[in-house]
Length: 236
Image 1 (cartoon, rainbow, N blue to C red):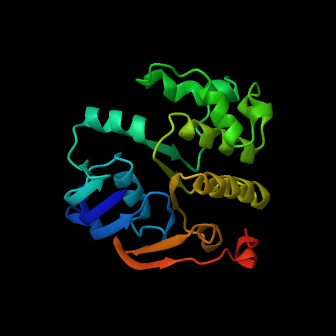
Image 2: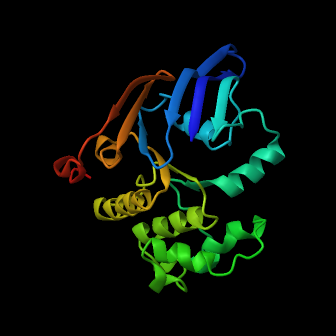
């Protein structure tokens, strides 16, 4: 599904320091449809920058990014926005839910920009997929942190994207809620969704099938995680 070839991302330092910094340096990565990949690394390793490039939120300064064969790294801003809406769902550490609207209404928001002929039932189906069909009329303040993040996952699912990008999705959660959210991501992956999860936490990364490690903007490790390690997962 995803092919990155020699991707670089360079930022110009603000004055008075000046100069440049390479947040990503010659990153080459292939992710197949249906994989569950964790991208790990310490703070400043480039993992959030890589997530932004994968999600077409940021444009690389070098290299090539192909999504199912389509060159997407040089799309115009308007083309990137349309592509994101159709093909990519996002889950962030902060839930970004509207406080005065119900779970169902929060999940329906991306459908405002949908080009589908019919969107009827999509939000209900997404909430059912994350186990919240009985919480559709609840507002965020009436939900636990884990439930709020599951609403955010349902919102990412509502347009039935090919790829779900989750950036530190458990960072604001207690251990039990974090496990609930990661279990939902595993279930979505088992149903065929491709998931890329960014985390600094080895216990969170252990839920993925494959772990890619970044350091200094470069990939320094890429391994299959093997069977889930319950002891490590319990470390949450």
